[in-house]
Length: 268
Image (tube, rainbow, N blue to C red; front, top):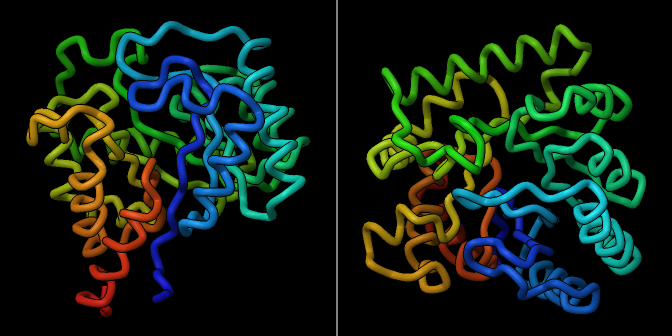
C-alpha cells in the first residue's frame, strides 16, 4: 500500500438523522464495528459526531449528544490508538470527549456557538478545527450571499485565528475548514474547490469536508449514498492544493484516489 501524505478523516456519525448515513451506526456495537472498518481502510483520524449539521437540522440537547458520543469514543479507544476527533459545538461535549480519549476538537461554529468552548481549548493542547459557516444549520442555505466568497472566508479565518491567539491558543494547533455546503451555493462550493490553494496563505493546516455533499448531487444527479465516486474525484483534485486533511465517509475510495493523485503530482 503506497503511503499518502494527505491524512484521511473517516466520518463516524452516531446520529439518527445525518444526511447520508443517519441511523446506520446508532448503537455502540455498530459504531465500533464501523470505526474498525474505517481504520482498516486507511483512516488516519476518526471524526465522531452526535448532532446532525445537515441543512435545516434541529439542535440536539446536551444530554442526548453526550449519550451518543461518549460511550462510542470510550469503546473505540479501548480497541484502537487512532486519533479521534469530536465533532461538536458544545464545550461540555468536547471536554468529556477529550477525557474519554478524543484527541481533536472539530467545531463547525469556529468556537462561536458556545462561549465556554475557548476555555476547553485553553485547558488542553489538542488541535482545533474551526470551520466557516454562514448562519446556522437551521438557516444557512436560505439564500447565502458573499461579496467575494474566497476573500470573505479568508477574512473570517484571519479574525478568528487572531482572536484565538489573543486568548492564548497556539496558532500551530489551529486547522481551518472552508465549510463546503455550509451556507454556500453550488457556485460558492465550486469556487472554494477551485481556489483551495489560497487557504494555504493563512499558514494553517487545511481540512476539506466535501464528502457526499449536495453540490455533488446537483452536478451528477446522484443521491447522497451514491456520491462516493464524485467525492473521490474532488479528493484527488485537492491534492494539487496540498490539502492536509480530507474528511470523508468512504475511506477506501478516497485512499485510492489520493494514492493515484499523489503519484501523478509528487511535487505537490
